[in-house]
Image (cartoon, rainbow, N blue to C red; front, side, top):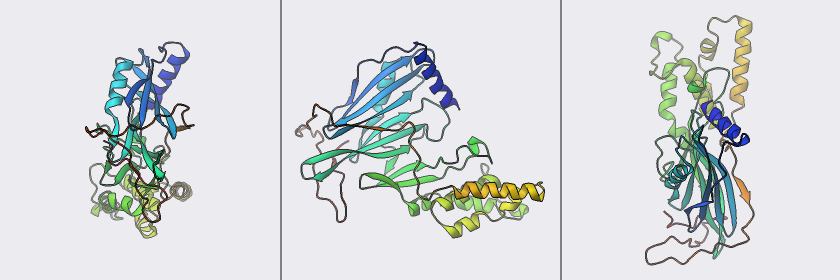
Length: 324
């Protein structure tokens, strides 16, 4: 809610003329992809709205983000510059709702260069992944070929508060220029939490072993969502052991049946392997009229996108291997 409130403040300020006109675009990165940002700052909310454009001769992308609280548009630009950069051939550009407790308020938008033909590179938007508050450098959501994200599909649900909503970690890998969920990887990343939930859901209340942050209801939702997401039917059956006892405490038969139906409908709505939606979206722009030609790498080691032959069965390949 705080994230939405800040965004509304920024919008109202714009409508009321309290926000200064956007400053001239400032370079965040120049090569091999040109990243620019223009900031509009609202003194009342201390929120800066940034218009980010990622440009390449093959095409461009654009999205709007908020940064705050800040003392000026220049400070917002400075923060954005620190959080924009290359890691292992991927370009990470930070995106934020401006502050709040939404699960994916802060994200890293991920771009890359691929070569469909020798000597011809194309800028591609691969997707977005959640970045927590401790993520203070570009690519901190990426390690050893894996992008870490978080499930937010039930951030608002009828069974528990926002703070207790089920939020399994998602393990993503890049394939053909897109981030895709690895179901086995996601299952592995959440095993400790899933096992703790099972211990907490034992039918005999006297034998339950619940960690401080886990309740039987939280365990039921988390484990059911995880099992459904990774298409593990046996795990889903185990996750729902004792569901009636957990959901229907002190309810009569009619109300219990209605609550169980609502729960089952909610879990059935979880789509296996579906990625969270990027809000607001990243827009694709046509190729720039003025080509931004890559420069030849210098002796100082400036990054240059070298085309590589595609792997067997692949249609595209990450090529900016030296970008940092």
